[in-house]
Image (cartoon, rainbow, N blue to C red; front, side, top):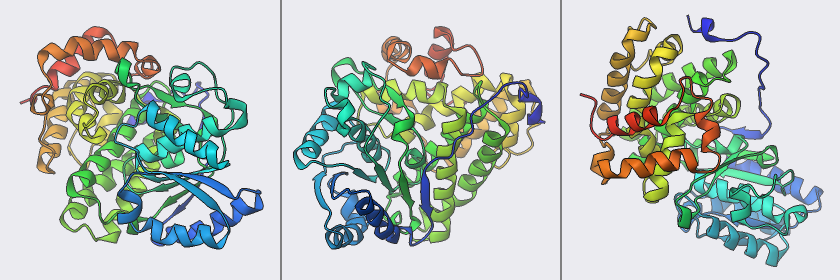
Length: 405
């Protein structure tokens, strides 16, 4: 039983802070959110998004009239790219300062919302002297941010309900993670009806991101029963509803439950943290910024399971029951679970391994170096269920180059 892996004498934090409006039609809650902004005396906002998502999802068709009717002025930074950079954040902040924005909307998945969170820190008067490089090289410890409103358009990120953000520092090939309480969104919107335009691969990659969030959270050194309970449900929901959403993109029930899995995944790693898979994906997408985050995680996940399963077999057997049925929760099943998860990924259409994306054995030295030297990633490696030595990290990268079998 996985319960035997819980340390009942360890005091843990259980976090749920953001007010998330969840369900079909939740987008209409922008009316209430804008009323709240006006009541706070806020009538100028920065919007962070990319050139496509805020339009194609229909978010802007609803939000723009509401902003106008409340007399809320806005400036829009629509240059967010996958794996956002500190330079993009600084550009967004510059626009926000020119307007005098006192709150920030993020419209999109992880990249726009993380940009929004970062900009919210730098727009607060107490942090006016800093830039995004200062923020992501930890030159200061941010304790305040202007209000954040996250309108989520994917079912993978979880960032709409947590205290995390990431950004790349291109010249260093660093992709550090920020974790501070002041970047919890005040409000989040999770509306499955705005996710029906997600392409098939993004449906897959974002859902797999959620699976990785809960896998790492429930096996970290700081996990707790709440995290394991939610992890089991998130994996079950993704296994059941992802194929349906790929085959029938307009199926709102499938989108609803994938979004629910993603949302509880965000709460999950807010409580249990992340470890090897994310610490190792960040170097992958730092050196190849076009790599979809969820795909990077998918390519690493089987090997991470292979290495970590012997330390937490009861937990991984419990959460992966819908994908690899019949596991007994004993250390000797590591290979069986890892291969079973890889086969599931292949069956749902995610067949790539690192070699297919152009990574070479000669890249491994750099990837290992970045995993151990990128600011903040050491904290993730430090809560892995096994000691994250350079040998272990190297072995996972090597095993992820090609299929395990």
